[in-house]
Image (tube, rainbow, N blue to C red; front, top):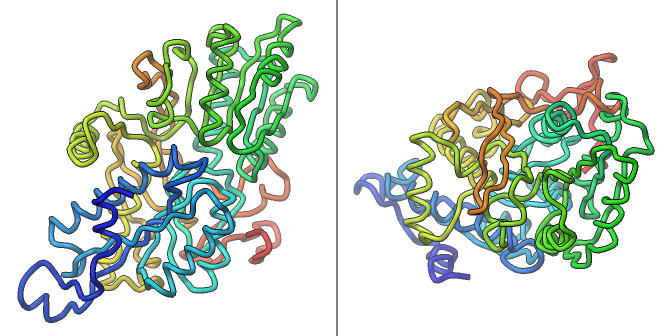
Length: 429
């Protein structure tokens, strides 16, 4: 942990407000913000930068007067890429550190681990990473992409723009890749892709030997049909996968790869010269041309170092954090129930030039971007939509197609539109 992180996570509980003398009297304790990201283990390659992003956002907010007259204090913990430990650390944040809100998690398995704790203790979690959907909790705001904001548009791009006829669905072996690929298999079959033309493979976290799997993908195209890869590989396993592609002489012209968990941070540690032309689908890329993004990049580099890059989950934290600040300001409190009510309809400029809107289903309306990897590790944005409303329940699985989430008016995360009843399946979490 950096000196800056240690400073933020060990601020005295007696720290007072940073504004006027009157405000100091009114504010006896800082407002605590939990930061729940892996700083060690296989996911540290992706999550450490999100911890740093949160520290920057909190520092900026304190410099502009804090929140409700009080200073914000970051409480940083390291769940160490250990999924049960995420639950323990979440409980520690809520019961020992008494944080007002938590920003954290990357993998869906870690989020699923945290959910029962957050719901039991009525905590509030802002989750910043693309995920598989099929979930709706009143205690979570999902600021990353749902499948209809990433996986489905990316698949359409491979089908319609690149003429892909056979698909290799490669993922890390946990809930997000498996659920996403279930959705995509159903979607591809609806699009006329034969079951035999869909190859699915899962590997453990930290997978390093990709030779056999890449050979299997190559063999898929022996009949001359165009093969494409949809990658839900997470963490440092991506390094080995892309290196094996390069070693096998596979270019994007041969077999295009579209990744859902590879961004600027993951590419910063790779020689990308052999990856040019491969794709990623996100809601943000550092290369987005907007004044807001230029300001964000400049602030990030000043805070973290000139060599550091930005990425999509950082933008999700940027949007979620500022919406939380605005909702708490509107509510006049950081009380979870009051903030939740104030979150609905919150708008905040995203970094690609549009406006993110928080929906009653706890998802954002966000644009969908397809980026092509460049030699410098950045992405050339080759496709961008207007804001797409996030859908908690996919239209491409029969059991989910009849469900909708509406916490504002219906107070329900699983409302069956056919039976007009609210189903609460906590076991889903």
